[in-house]
Length: 207
Ligand SMILES: Nc1ncnc2c1ncn2[C@@H]1O[C@H](COP(=O)(O)OP(=O)(O)OP(=O)(O)O)[C@@H](O)[C@H]1O
Ligand SMILES: Cc1cn([C@H]2C[C@H](O)[C@@H](COP(=O)(O)O)O2)c(=O)[nH]c1=O
Image (cartoon, rainbow, N blue to C red; front, side, top):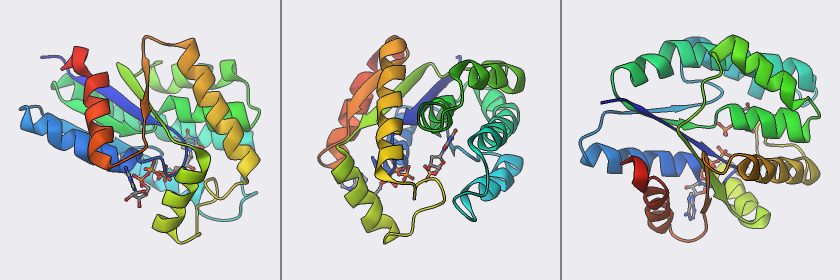
């Protein structure tokens, strides 16, 4: 059976990592092989690039350099982890993918969408998820969840100001409107189990 490629997207603290774990359990209970992965990261080379991207001073990289590093990490992740898993029929669940570059470096950072897509075509053969779940949560609730988790110590991108994160959120909404076939917005409020039920409903046609 062909594998399925699912991405979870959204701003900081909306519950993506929590839901990847819960969704993976639900899919395994249905007998599927599931690979849980994340970006930046998901392969040894990409995890090394993750450290470069998320550690250090806020101004360590320009938006353009960040874009190149994310694209390089993604190329390794796709080649070493995602494509082999899909080829053997697994479900691949990734915590962030291309749309995060389009929202953060593009919509919020000012790098052109066409350039980001061109890098993705070169590095990752233009691979896109079968379905992208956009977790939606009001900014204050997401910030409260992230602050409970991190105690106020975010990484160099998560720690950017509220106006940056508002542009990220607006860019995700624009991407979802642009590709309604691939994207499914999911209400991420309320208990985690309720959110998982909404996610399974948004994948019903693929199950
Ligand atoms: N439905 C929920 N209700 C309450 N708290 C939640 C819920 N889902 C997740 N959390 C908690 O909120 C915090 C952030 O969740 P999580 O790490 O899954 O978000 P994330 O979207 O992966 O964040 P980031 O992108 O910043 O890594 C965690 O402490 C998690 O336990
Ligand atoms: C893939 C990707 C990620 N980012 C940002 C988004 C977050 O601030 C961090 C990743 O941290 P997380 O806790 O694992 O969510 O990186 C980005 O700016 N561009 C991207 O392409």
